[in-house]
Image (cartoon, rainbow over the protein chains, first blue to last red):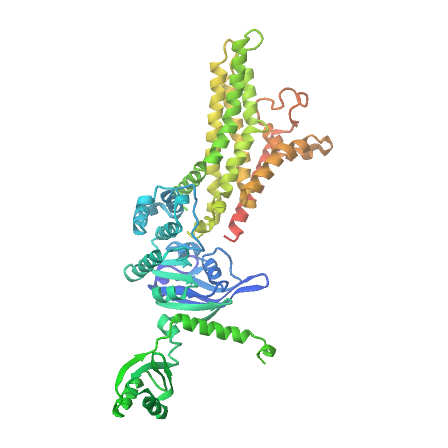
Length: 330
Length: 268
């Protein structure tokens, strides 16, 4: 046991890479983080979604000790911070806002300056890190000659010097072209799936998070609105099951569905009939049976998957509505 | 933190500042050019009119060379430029937060700047002092040359005077966080305010607190250019060795303390 109460075995036994309870950060009168409770499982890609100014960068800066918290507790890789900040950050790589470098130094020299701070054994990771991000050929050029995409990749290489169990990336695809974004996404997935690392990504790009992450939290105005697996978030926690039904006689089908106890609502749409089920998703099979029994030809029966973007807009719009003063609502 | 990591951190900070070629070139220009010009002009004068001009080397010209480097201007300017560069390098480039994210203590990040700055500053000053010695001995002709003791004392004084000012510059610039503001403030203090305050005799012994006055106490030659107050040079006060030592110590403790405090507490 260490003198601050947590030893390596205890920390590693924790299944969470990041854990916060009631985390609060205020800048004067403004509350940037308002009692944040966040749980990020190890070995996953976790998206931290929110509009600009929602508090995404603030939580990253607070977790990393770049600024202090006003209240609440935090653990990184099982270690309490700030009490065991040095231990916690030994195996953490982070890019906060845009990656910044000494422009007058080469890419390799920039990595050397960080390796010197991290530890003697870290020098051996410089070449593999450069190779991992595809910068070996340009490593001896000054960073001021690098494109934005190359700087992002050098930022990731700098993170890899820690041989990180946890990577914290703040808006990592900013400034990348579509090819770079695709490459970046593949790199993140490979880090999670093949190397078992945890990646925490803050972003306002919902599509990006949906394609890259396993789980996410939606934050707005310093509060977490929802968090969970991407599919759960998109489906709204399985509160509503909807299917698209393609039939040869939509009018008759609507009449049959309207009378069915299995259906809460049915309406026409461009794609076919949109049917909201009153029960579990498997009741879709019973609805199909009812239509077929009535002599209708069913050509399509497809669950509606709500995108994360739709869900995000829905919850943030609800929050906006809640904040409208009563007299305006009236 | 192990000694190996401390040494590597100093090496990394040295890399950052020695590759700032603008600062390095200006430092070399300020330290070397006046010495070169001084000896070349004296050598040309002597060769064109040996009867009216002494050889360019010898003890007297060594003392003048030492004044050029260790006086109020050139050596201190080098120390300020390099110290400020070291103090603001990470902040200016925006990478301080990336250093903090490594988990290394902020105090260690601050502390490594000081020896890195001293190493570069002293390298430049030593190069310039070597030129002074070359001129002193190579161009001495029949003149007496300085004793080994004077040469060593001169070296010690230069290292002390530029080292203290360089360390103060690291601390002050880490506190201020802005390279231009720190350079302007330190030069204004060193060249204008300090000299001005020292000339106000009604301030009495309070003037002993001026850094340049305390440093001058350790000079093996009179930096005023002759007797005190009588050659138009800067006012040099007389103080005891203990007072001078305490004043230097106070400047170091205050500015290194403030610089480390700011580095430890600032939002990165």
